[in-house]
Image (tube, rainbow, N blue to C red):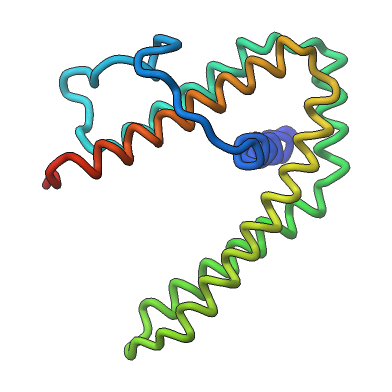
Length: 176
């Protein structure tokens, strides 16, 4: 049960961030992993760095929220109520991704088949985003305004990491 709750929590966090929209983090704001140059020896691939730092930021968020036992129980109850929907959405994304992958790897390039498979994957991702938005609303309802602000700040920081990575990829020379 604990593994399932962790998996659903991760899906809900995805929904919270995906459904929240986007904003760019001001350079250096917030400190920690979201600010400053890469450490010596760190990968110079901006997208990989953004993914690593976003995961770290989200991991730290759980400690920053300082949720009560009552809030934890309410969040788990809300997520468990959507278990079947989450499982269905994850299966839908997985199956659609497999179909797209097969279409891309086919011996002959069939643009229509690839586009149809990509559209199916997009619909499945949309279904997960809608579910995430619903779960987000239920989770945020049990949090304090300060906790909701912490989540919004983390979302903005993560969005900023990816904005910076994209900008770096656009302006930087390709790395081997």
